[in-house]
Amino acid sequence: MGTLTRAQLISQAGLASGNDQTTAFVRTWLDAWLKRTAKSWAWPVLKVRIADLPIAASAVSVDVGNGTFTAHYLHRIFNPLFFRTSDYKQRGRIFIRELLDGNPDKDETLVQASDRLGAPSTVKIRKKVGSLGVFTLFPDPAPDKAYLLSLDCHYVPASLAADSSVPWYESDRTLLQACKCALLEYDDGGEGGQAYDKEMQKLAAMVIDDRDFDGEGPGDNVTMGLDKSVFV
Image (tube, rainbow, N blue to C red):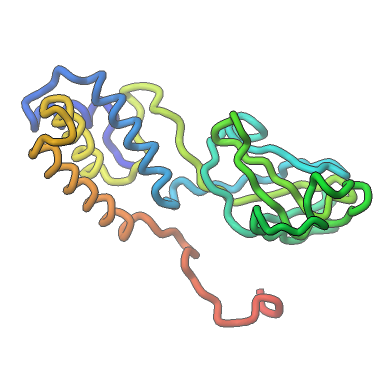
């Protein structure tokens, strides 16, 4: 994350623009911008491992996210997932498969779980309707025993709790620019204002630059030129 608090960011942007009377508006604007920017890229700082999610024997599905097992508001789940037994004697990988693959032998509503049990090897993932930030996992085959799942996820941070909070975004310079854009939208009438449009274009370019500096984590985009079924 950066080093400046929300109060410091808003204050500095206000001094630079000569407008320090729109603090409430900038708070709301900045929070919305941070959430949208969090979703726009798999930032390393927003990747989290969720470990030991329990799934019972014969369970057709399990939910995770936004208060269900974890507090994190999930945006994306990465491939593969992993499973283990509680005694660590059995473990393996579970690969995400296409949601609409059309295979009736793997559809959780067409096959009785008791007729198809085993160590899960694939999983379908759906966003849970009516529960933002929550995903439902449908393992195939249905588990023949209780397992613990581990998954790597991209999450969206909660709104900043206070002016003393420091945003998750790692560039204070870009955050200051975002606050400046918020002030201009308030003063300039938003879209259509020339100053606002110009500064928004600058903000977008800064975010692209930040992806080069902060947008890749250790191990990301590393390609192994060996057969993964033999070399791990």
